[in-house]
Amino acid sequence: MDEQSSLLALFISSFLAATLLPGGSEAVLIAVLIAYPELQWSALVLATVGNTLGGMSSYLIGRFLPNERALLKISGNRIRELEWVSRHGAPILLLSWTPLIGDALCVAAGWLRINWFWTMLFMAAGKLARYWVVAIVIN
Image (cartoon, rainbow, N blue to C red; front, side):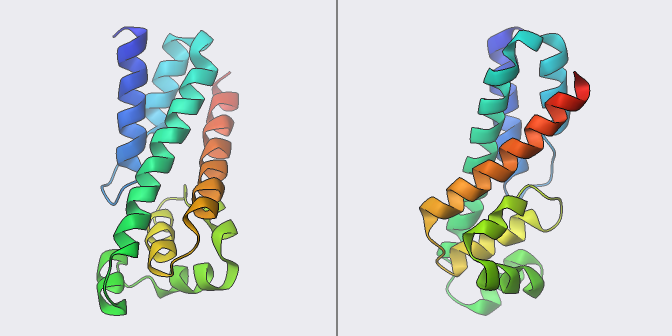
């Protein structure tokens, strides 16, 4: 796979990994960084943007859910995350990268109508930090 195809695959996997679909993008990031170490910053930016956009798609799902019952159905009865977002607001989205709770946090933020800009900013910061740690570990 060439550089552009690798970065495209990273972006797509990062986006999909942050949606309600299962999957992880760290393995793709690691593969890209091993094959093309000179693309570290490009890879980190694309993975972060893709993962943040995927998280924002979950935010939009929450935004358009009509009632609490629908939210609970989508988020798998994860009331804990709803309470966390309600209590802490957008900064809790720093944890949106975490397995199992990250998607529910994004959906809850949308349902609670947390400001989209701050949601996206905190979400991106958390996701970038996670990818940066992965990049540091493999170098």
